[in-house]
Length: 107
Image 1: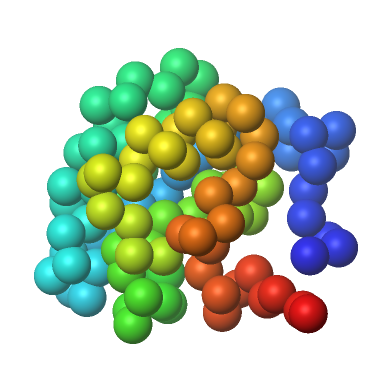
Image 2: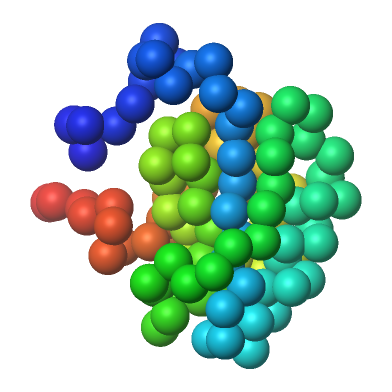
């Protein structure tokens, strides 16, 4: 996505946030446990928040990494350590968890 903020954007000074949907479909698919797993990861300098519907009900639990507008789908607690290490620490999104409705792949 060409309009994604980069680490040099004016938003860089904002606290990074992770939103985990806590609305019906997502909670029915385990988002409460996913939220807890992110909280237990003790991400220094990152706010982890439960939120209302993110509009991706058919692919929940949905996780949105606001700093770079990365959206993950069907995130289970066991996926959290991989997302934390690969995306949040190493800067590489976890391809197999990217929401295909938002992160279109061409080719």
